[in-house]
Image: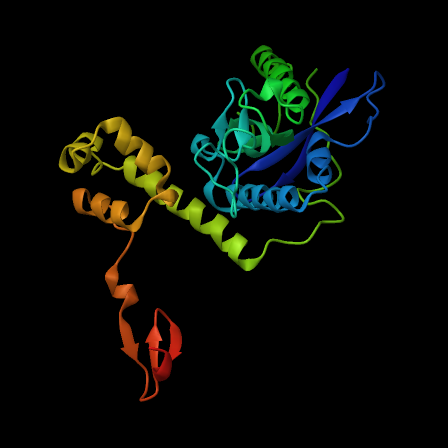
Length: 160
Length: 118
């Protein structure tokens, strides 16, 4: 499986990217990862929380920048929202429902790679049926991304 | 050879968006981020001494740190205590003062209230 980092949008303070799975000819296989996140939810509660995350991304891009406090840490990558954020009308009990998670790679204050996610229903995301695959994808991608950055194989405008 | 990043061919929004946030939801997201950002800047300022605040409130530093990171969930009581122990100012009683507009209405924080409802 090959993955390309593709450019989404430049906002006032942040450039946003996402990941696209491609074949050996570098042709797109399906939609990009962030599009998959934006279009996967059918439940009203999921859709509302999705909208809140999208609103936060907009504010990060237009007003606050991608400083690390805006994100929750997952080790080599990050998530939105941060652990201190409570969704509006939240009934997350912290045992069977932790709310929506969007996994991403915060490169620096000015560049973020938005990936995929889901509704977290287990404390350990690797055991959550909704988050396991996007979590592991983000984990592998972030490690490969930073290896490529260090070795100079990847250079993205706006990224240091 | 280094290659430039290609475009996804779309921006942050999807072409067929679902319904937008209600005004209350929108205001909630904006306010929570604004408060969190204010607190963050305060904790990075030279005036901030977490240890002093903890001593004044008879709490531990980790408790104060937890308070500040979840500020949008605090009660009025806790906010007032934090204000009294530091230079942080989030609530000002003056914004809640009634201002009489005319003989039949009062202005409350910018919203007119008929005399009969006061």
